[in-house]
Length: 607
Image (cartoon, rainbow, N blue to C red; front, top):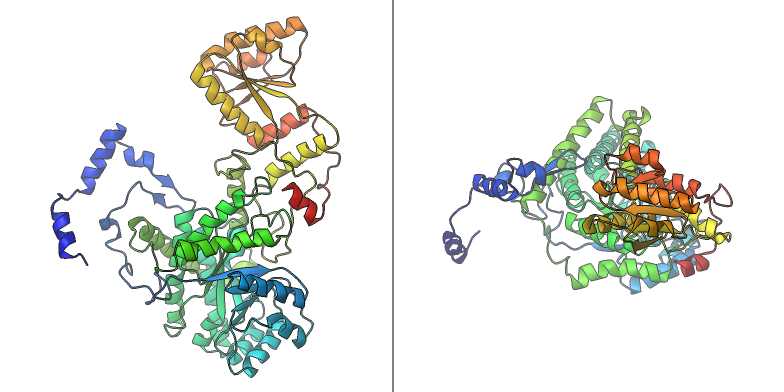
């Protein structure tokens, strides 16, 4: 509600209509298509406009609801706090407990045991010793472990909060029995939406698939006599938050709203209809080169999870794909959240983005489209039938292909990998580390094709060969030569090529350079004369150094006939181009297989 002071303040300014904003844009951009030029299309199919106004959200429902109120679009609680979850990878119960307690002492508030080997009840007690006040999640849990945990929870007068990553739809008969006996605070089942995100799903598909799986779980449990509210309280949802910041925030907000409506339709109480959401930062967009960029990625992705209202958040250690994370990288991941919570005070306010016209518009779109996907899956007989028919797999394969293609062509930027790579970085003996996660494909990371090019280059030089000498020869037009040499340097670095930029006044000076490859950097109008002079001088000197032209001028075919070997420009296929020139320069790894692995200490030293 506006105060009297704010009312008086706004009265001093005349109202500005949307038409006036539009006219100002057209005037400044000197085009009638101003909005189209500034708008962009998301992968989900929503056109994001350059600005939003109050009238854009006037017809949306739930935007005025308070945080913590049904249908929980704005969060399931009145505060914005969340639990800092830390994953523990140790398999031995005693060692896992030691690491967990150390993490809690350093600020973790929730522990997830990833691959713990539990032989009996004694291992469970050793594992949970000293963690009585801490919620604990067992990422990999089969029926026998769940039965033991259930027995423990029922025997304790004041049991701690426990959850497992057991697939909700894996064994419905077993699930129904557990649901009937499970006390509050025990969440034995999980729907793994993060698996779809890692496989390429859009935010809409994540919501739709998770909603369909959850509805199937509620329906199947009801058929077996389980109470709807108890069923809803026995399942949590795990999401991955990726780089599309506002869509990731809106994704969690939208899912809570549609899940609450779906749960209510099954007869769940409004309290039971609160979605329990655990989020973690994405892995598909991380890279082994320039790995510290992963810290920055994780920070913004964690912020998206927090602003989206996740109950627990995991920040993936920056070096997870390079080696087993050590105490330093785990601490960096943990402290990322501690900074956001304690210094940035992001837990002080619930749904900080609520009321943002753009965010509310995106949230409403994702909710509607997610519900549409649910109806499509229901029309095909439900989640399990659609899954068995390969419906989700086909969608994910198509999405994954689009995403990987976008990374390959650099339309989707991965800083440090396909843009602004550090060609001098060396990780020659390291290979990608797979954590053995059941929900993450071994080749899910989009950076791998570029990393394989760089590893081939590293193996080549490690075998005693010299790095090819690539000259970016600037000549002629001052503006274009600098722009094109800069582009070419960034382009070649993505394949591990080191380049040298030099400026020349005459083409004959370039012909004297003792290098393995020349990239001519000038303006289109100058290439015909420059190339003719350069090729003539090189022929006179008996030099056969290949020449590449930076750009694709109209006279490209004539330049090819004159001896130009290739062209590098914004439409070049980076992976194909870089692989071709590795082969042309006789850069070949000693073996065709993966680089040999080394122990974590050597990997850490090289990183």
